[in-house]
Image 1 (tube, rainbow, N blue to C red):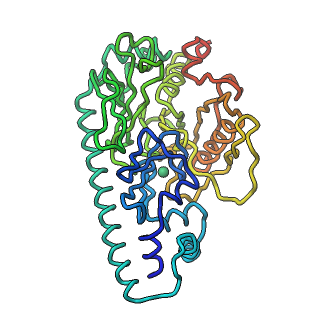
Image 2: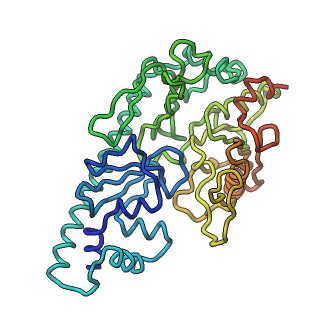
Length: 397
Ligand SMILES: [Zn+2]
């Protein structure tokens, strides 16, 4: 107990976390002790994992994606799957901290540590509330059935809006939304502004919004790009910690089959192609919004995993952690079958397949009649997702 408080106060969280992650330099602000990185606990490409450690020791971490949080001890316990006492011992040795007890010193560190923990929790709560207020404001300022959104979806992404019976009510267009970068810095700056597709995240109430900026001059060109040609990144706003795993629901909640994809456009492309072929089709369509949420965490089996032939990185596991308190996307209540829309990848076809198989296994666990994978062209080694196939006319064939 006591030694742990001293460990929390004196060991540098940044140093420990750095052993595992690479900081996002653009978002991080070392002068203020603010660091951002892709979360080591849930699969993601963007940096939602945040640590704050202005004094260079005694920091706290918080993931705005999956909600994992705590001290350097919590971090080591989760990362290395070791118990509390082992984590404290390892960190004490790492920080050259005397493991023998001194009551006065112990009491001081304990009080300091509790105050710090409370402050971090208050800040996280405040940020979460601010997020959902912002999300709700953006949603209310956005417009239903906007022609710009129809053009973006139809010509930019190969979706037949007519087949869908109109734009789903969970998608709106914000005519002029600023895109901020540099959340870790003092003043986030606007890097782009223009029309954006706003997705309502949450099955029964708004927990956040998903933002996709579209080309401001010609929405038929697809997503908005910076001057250097790079796409303006998609963003989330909302009740942090609650968003991850919550979908944008793209159809009426009817039928016993759910079709889930990572992206809104991919899922809509399959939905509209299905309805073109079979207008009476009954099924629910949901976008899980991130690969990590769709696939969920990996089981800790301890089995040695191979390396990717293309990237040299350790391959993901196809086995889901079915006991995880943060499973990511799950099929909605009442469905009996699931179809998972996979995204192929030339970067590492093997990883794409293993991740998709984990998503399939997780969904199958929650569906009495099982789950199956839909793979674009039935192959993993290319970069066309279902929206790309739709745009190329390969889906309606
Ligand atoms: Zn996370």
